[in-house]
Image (tube, rainbow, N blue to C red):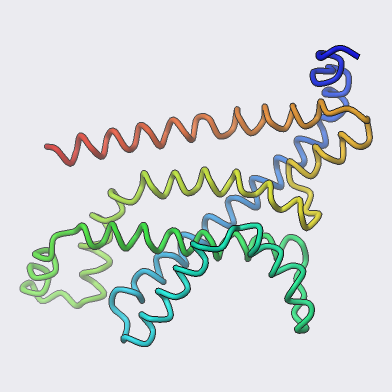
Length: 224
């Protein structure tokens, strides 16, 4: 067989498109859920790390360090394969969402911490002078400024998260890579994997460029 017939077989690609689209939909759902849950949890963890009592701050630092140090695949395997030995069982979907969300939360917490700490301390002092409570100051004064700073790195983390969803195939979750692998086995041809790679590229390349644009805008705004 030629290179085209082996890796770019149009008949096999056309036949596998329904499977690939189904996998893409699952990938999008998994990625969006993991990002929403992870970013929200990361903001909470960040606030606890910065302003909670010392024992809680220690626990949040430990959480962030552990889940930033552990590969996503290891976390996924521990949640899906190891927890059943202690009587805790999750479906493939739940395991994937939980694992990716925990890792995303750790990275998001560090991003938010960097953003909040970059806001001048005078903002807290000014808000206090106006009689604003700490929660109101944090919500209406500090976070709006910090969010502008954390958007570029958070977008970059989102791109990485969508790529990491391919690891969910290790727990037999029918995301894009898993569907491509099943189609490859069924048709005895690697063309579906090439199709999945093209889909990833078409979907993620604009997000990668968006990260660059956001970083440039932030640098320009910072120099004004």
